[in-house]
Image (cartoon, rainbow, N blue to C red; front, side):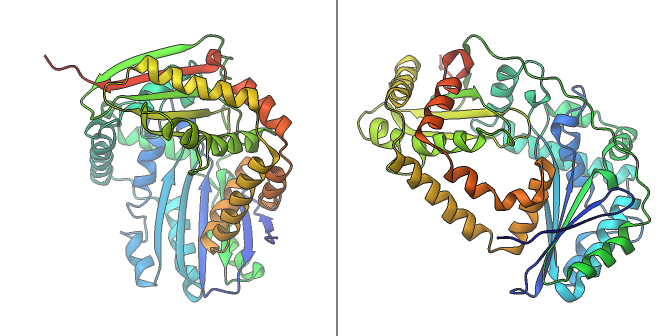
Length: 414
């Protein structure tokens, strides 16, 4: 059981706290409720751009990292479709340094033309490296644009193109910051060797006087149910042909989310999984075959990805996947099979939750989705899954009418 304390400032900031006396360190995790889904469709990639801009310094510190490192700390950040997450790790006796730096960049971020252009260049180069100059780098762009028709999950976190980032102005950045970065759009978790009273004291001291902006989360369009198969074929300079199948699935807080997760494990987690035993070991169709899920707030995608062996056609590979899925739908999952993967998940969760940083990150995420205390209920949700649940959810989800199939392969040379 992870003990969670909570406190809300008058300006809307939500503080979470977990005491871990086994370490001399403290983690501050700051989750801002803004991700790629909150962007203007014509101005994508801004949430990720701001992840970079937040390290550009503030009014009272030219550098964010240097004072933190001088105090024995380190920091990093990541962006998803739903949120932007920052974290600092620092010795408990120097915790106030992290509070000062985090409050100063929220209150007085240094947004100059020079720094803005520098970070734009960094993000553009990252886009080129990850999406344009890497084999299969644009897969996320292609599958999202075709699997979604109206929901802002249509574009990946990094944005639609480098041109959009290149055309961004400093005024655009300031508008984005003022529209999303505020105490009433922030969840802060302090986890480690610090008392709850001290965490409240420091949060009030460094964040309490920052005025809220009364952030209004916009209403996102609901993605309509897909009623017919979709297929996309692209050619690129890649070493192997690949099949990617994306099935619409529920969101993170849906009652069936954990069941979708176990289905992906039954299909593809380890050498005893269905894909390994029945496809990879018994045929020469794929060199690898995997399944995974998205953990998005709104309904996301369940992926099946396979790399074809040379000489195998897309149709043959697709047929082999459908054949195995049909067998799974007919046979269902045994209680033993479900228990095996639930136990593996329990074991992983127990190990991860040893880390004070991992707990800080997870508590913020759970609070974002529903309630931080749900971290203590997750294992129970997995343990309650039955074979009937697996069969019901698999039949609803793994239908070709609910699927977008991408055939992504080697460019034919003349």
